[in-house]
Image 1 (cartoon, rainbow, N blue to C red):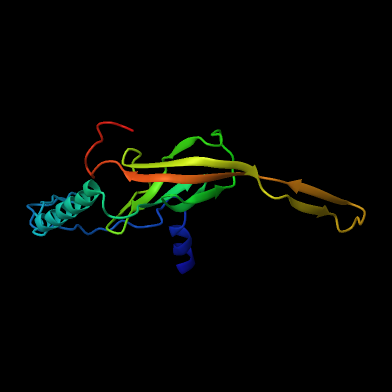
Image 2 (image 1 turned 90 degrees about the horizontal axis):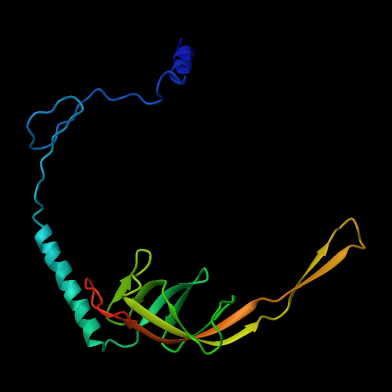
Length: 191
């Protein structure tokens, strides 16, 4: 008898989970019907203090951005599938090639985080393109050293192939990292 009930509950005609027959009542409500719950919004006492703390934090960060005397900025960028932690005048080497020639300046737009010794702004996942301006110069475009792979078939001792590879390299110098405008404000003139 137990085995028949077990098989019966696993068939496609019956759901695997049973529905609950209980009805729940919300706090401070009028009447409830079966499966219909009316709720009342309760004002949070701490929401006003929390909002004041958030506004104070925004004002402090905006003051640091406007003064621009917080020291050297750093940024975490996403470039060709890798993340780099950069500062002003850093050199980064990317194992890839792109259309910019040596001596040209480019703008790096995928910024994950930016900050200095006073604050850090984190993107979820990216910061907006008009908030952070990161400019880099292509210093050199070259190739890597020669890598080689040997392919061999163990049963055939005479089969051995050598494959030589070189990959493009691009060397970039970070010119400057700027936070363009205060938080929760729009930039009127785009650089």
